[in-house]
Image 1 (cartoon, rainbow, N blue to C red):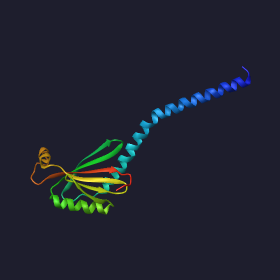
Image 2 (cartoon, one colour):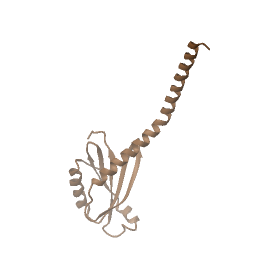
Image 3 (cartoon, rainbow, N blue to C red):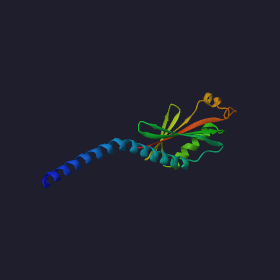
Image 4 (tube, one colour):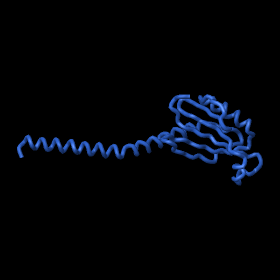
Length: 154
């Protein structure tokens, strides 16, 4: 082979290998980037959840992570012996302290918004509380706090 033909062969080989490498990257990267994004968002939401104080006579007994339509949501379930009005008032003040704005009530769920997060606070029906032996005592209620990322629009 003469020198020019050898250089042409090497150039073609480099282009083909580069295209194969790029194809492999695009096949692998969306999955890896999505997993990284879910993990990063979960850590961020768990840190935000830790900053939310609980009202008196309340215990956190479940935290669940959900990945819904590309977003990460955190669901925190709590058990309390306090009355509904006291807990509602407490969380309105607590979310305001953390920079959330109250957006109103929709279907028995209080909605809050901050520049980086959305939050909602909902009471579980009393019939659901009766199914759990730990909450079947009179006066014990269950409520949920949902946290999710926000694109900055409130």
